[in-house]
Image 1 (tube, rainbow, N blue to C red):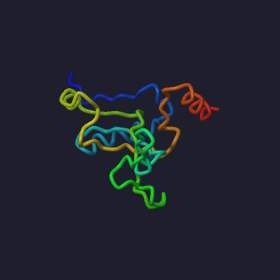
Image 2: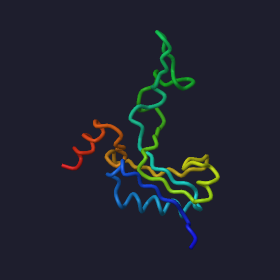
Image 3: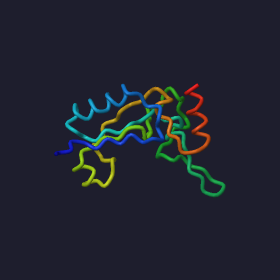
Amino acid sequence: MMVDAVLLLQPTSPLRTLDTVQRGIKLFRKHGNRPVVGVSPATSHPMRCLTVNGDRMKSFMEGGGLHLRSQELPPAFVVNGAFYMITPGDLIRHQSFYSDDMVPLQMLNPEEGIDIDTEFDWKIAESFCK
């Protein structure tokens, strides 16, 4: 028996939908079995992030974005942990679900991207289940 893909649906992301899982599988097939990783819009834009060194701050990214209005910032996404799909060969080769040719499975519905790592995350996820 030949395995075509490894699909990881982490239990810490329980609010993903069946439709999203099916979209991810379709993306995997459509893009020639390239790795597919679930992403959500970033809540804190990286161009607005800072590094702190003692009593000094500087932009995390070269050029920063503090001078830009939020509407002028390019879209930014974060890996949300809700969906990973890859061929076994790529997983062995990269030793990771991540590679330079990943296909994004965009999850624009905020609750689908909830990743439960803390008690606070649990409370947020629980609020969507009521």
